[in-house]
Image (cartoon, rainbow over all chains, first blue to last red; front, side):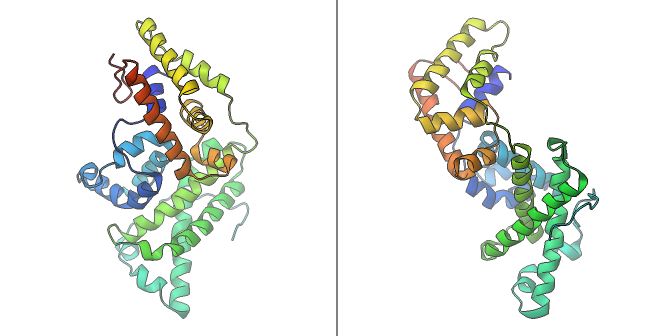
Length: 70
Length: 221
């Protein structure tokens, strides 16, 4: 594991973030904003930081994005 | 609803207007045949999403055959349907109903695959985590890295509660999926992530107090 990757994994994002439950609640809206090219991170603050910090939620995001992006 | 030895189809669920614009809420809340038909159609939709997810992750399960993977997808669709129907009143209409529904199937499928992939495996010990830490230094920054990583290890050992240390070491250092750890510890993803989050805040504060200035994965002392 590279040093910066390891620091990122251990220390997590340096920004306020959603919880896993909030992430799941907002995931469908966030994905549709991303797919539509809308400013998803501005519309749903804390989502990007959570996806950087939570590998499981990040996988869920990528799967839903890929599923609905045609 | 599990069946054996069915081939895993590769296509994504339908994205056409007839599916996405259907009045799902009205139909699912209907009594009688209309409601039952909507539930059956919704299950088919969830099954396609679950198959999509299981197929994406099939490489994590090289020991499973096609029929086993199909069973996983069926179980995920069954569980997703129950979870979704319990939360039907939470749908706010801020996305398409189908996008909202798919996330239930993807979550259930992903969790089942991760847990199956770790079935019978031990969660790695702390010693392996320290080896990861020691091996993470990059060329040309040896002394700085050694100092930072030594401080980090000290703070992990000294500043965190045993529970925080257990979760952080497993998830962040040893890459144990958080759903797998939650199952082993009788907890939930959300509860463990809160523990991980608190541990990370504590480590950041401790390193800052020792003079390390750390941004997102980049130390600036």
